[in-house]
Image (cartoon, rainbow, N blue to C red; front, side):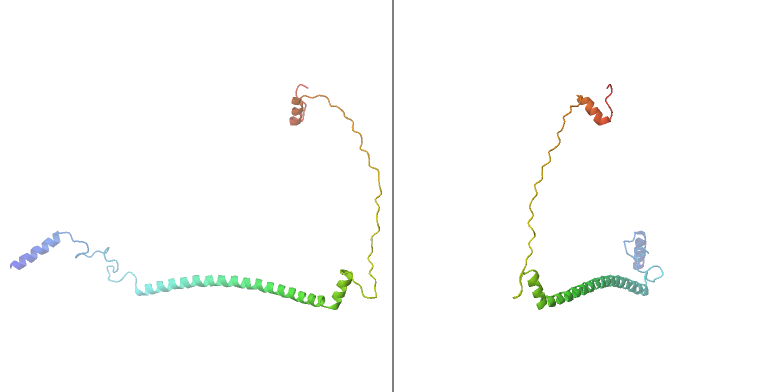
Length: 171
């Protein structure tokens, strides 16, 4: 009997004493993983769906970056193809000019025009322009300037006329 009385006393003392944090009392604020119904807040299907959605978003961002890089590479390739065609045309023209410059016809034309060379039975004639003599001419005399004296004007009247385009008051 003594044990039963002590057990009742222990029970009443626990009820009267406030419960320590996390001891004995379960509150909804403390158990966030499982609400009142006993089910978790997020099901495993929702977690898998969220993971797939996040991975697909990352893949879409990666693919869009690759597409942009591919467009830049295509643009640069078109520009380089255009430059290659231009350089090939220049190379063809230079090969044709090299063929002409290497021929005897070019060497002979250069020797006659710029080298002032002639063949064995020819004479070199260099035209000389006629000598021009300077014809003297009379130096004109400058006209004589007549100095005319303007009437004396005071500085105040002169400045007034320059600033206001009218004669000073009182004149």
